[in-house]
Image (cartoon, rainbow over all chains, first blue to last red; front, side, top):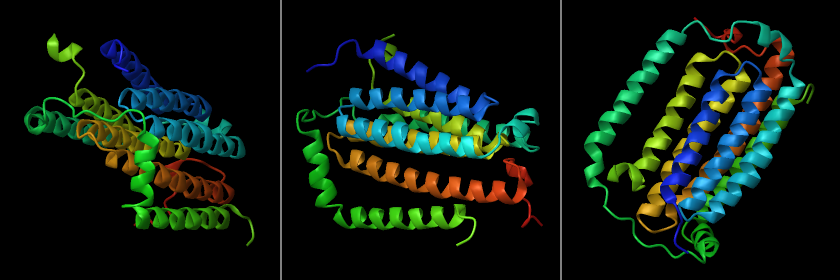
Length: 169
Length: 105
């Protein structure tokens, strides 16, 4: 199915994403930041749908907005945030941080002004109806080894998180 | 006007770069560890957006497979990072990142 009103939805979702991102880094209360981050992640999932990546969009919603953000909210509830909300929010080297970020933004602008001529003009056509099958074929075929390593990584992360958060092992 | 209304890969790349910059600003300036970790998630999401946009541009799904690997890494990073945060809070009773200065010279 051909997409309808692509520019409108792109700018709408991009606006929601950027506003959510700005709220994430400016709110005092981490709970508000987490909720803004969830909004950002959900609109990013919609942008994945616009890019014909429905499987990644589903993984984004289930795993990121559903799993990781719940973990974040749990930890925010565990640590006490009242004291840190009353304190100074920016660290002492924030001016240097802003300067470094501005320099990085200038680098991005320079690269995108100069380098976009190497991109092809039109996107190649994609097969729309079996995206999940295609991803699965690559994941269990060509990227089998990386897939197994990723499972090992998750095992190490589970053990690491338990060891780190447990009072006495 | 044409370049504004016709959405190309560059638009997605610029959106990803803006999100990346927001994440970098959050990591470099904020003091609360939880918000720093959330800014890292913003950075990882910006990378994911680029991967999926390029995967659309070249008509394959390799980029989407890489995006799934990045999401796996983000889950592992969040679990370990929040575990460290809980251990840190238990020892110091604070969530401010600039009070982690035991190894500072």
